[in-house]
Length: 329
Image 1 (cartoon, rainbow, N blue to C red):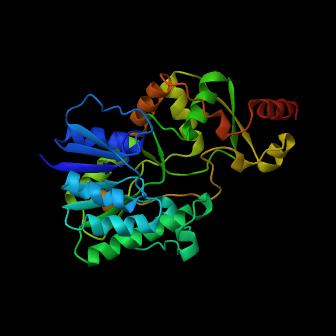
Image 2 (image 1 turned 120 degrees about the horizontal axis):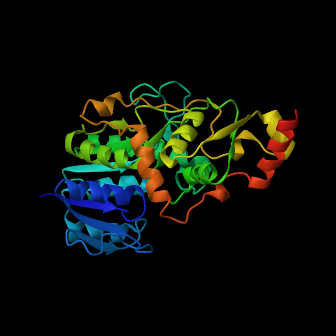
């Protein structure tokens, strides 16, 4: 049995990763700040070490005490953290960094790991916390992975786009789940063909494990739903999983302006298609969960939660004003 270290492991991606590892015979150590309930507290295959991932001394002490075979770095948001971790864990069998599809700096369809340009990252951007430089910092982390591999460390990265599924604390998809479950009419920006590829969280977890076991040092691997769906299809999948009939109301930006709204006010909307090729990961034997099944699992957990995602999108009263106007046109 191999010992795996998950840096960040009780909320969303890390939680599913721990489950994936346990199902494949790993002994797991979780390293996080301990600010959230640990769902694995009663599992003797999982140990938890409390500490701050941004504290280099704490990470160095962790390396000595945990002595892992494999390291999964789920919550590295600055390139300096990746650079430090790949040196501290330079002798492990595998180090896998969770990057992001936001690392890409070129609007091609699809985006490919070995062809599509990634963002530059200035020294100032490398230390920022803003969402505007998130992609720059993730791209810089990918470059640190490549440098570590050049030094002889078996380091790799996995790039998901927007991740969804059970226990998603971002509540981006919960906005749409709540709308479909609660209202007869759901406003969708544009004509419904917007395509922003997503990745089911359980598939991200399996990708991380498979890359650790079979990946090539220095490589970057995209992960995402192999059957990417438009925003209309996403709403349809939600309706089917919930057993709800969905009346979609499409609205252009001009129409949305009637209620002082715009397309980008809606979560999971992107004006230009964002699609990642998963061919490289598939060559390792990975496959994604069918989107129908992924949505069923997502809906089942959502209904047991108190999340509604309302803060991620327009106020319902604004949508109702818009629908009322459109129905009179």
